[in-house]
Image: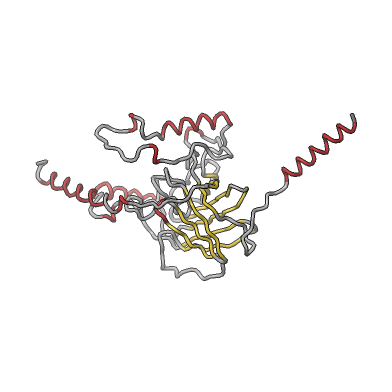
Length: 325
């Protein structure tokens, strides 16, 4: 009996030691953690915590399953009630890929800081600028293509980042590493970020870019990417209606990529824009490996839809000027 008890304790100790042993990521030829592959950040976890959840940071297993069923039902664009009378519709549900699970931690939001899971309030001046730009857009929504949203014009999507946020579809990325560089190709709008991971001076302060100027460094096994020099625009940079807000030229994003298992990367990004938000905020999004390749994303809306939008606006103006004739 004693030897059986001893064997049980010995096996338990071995199992505990194996579980406690830190997973070691594979390495590239130059010794860096290997982030290469095709990954997806599709998830049903909402960007911000729903207000009705209050201070609840995590779902129970049963609550997560119920929330997943609800979200799948709510986001089904083929539901009869999802289409308004006279609405011709767009893509049907087969084209969407939001995933079918919440994140493994069962967090109630992708925002992990502040603790309420919500984007902080805007500064009074930023709110004034935002309200003024929205009012102008409502008054003159289509004088020219520059009045339309960046996503509608196929210029920038939230998936490209930084920060890299899930979209309703095409939530896929390909990461390629070479000595001194990491390249991230986002399937959504086929944007590629070439990130130098070597000593290199930043671009001049007056040079602004849609995706900013990114520089990487390694902190242990974590790739840290620091990005500044964003283009100023009153339209939201965070994808398709993620939040009621905007950014400006003072936006600063710090991203962290950490391999946590054979098929997972933990992605964290902290957003700081002191002239827009009253305090920084952080998202945490797991990325899982995919075996399927990326496909070309041809954003035809910017090529064909814009003509229809602008010509339709001119037709409405002509109708109003002639008393509806």
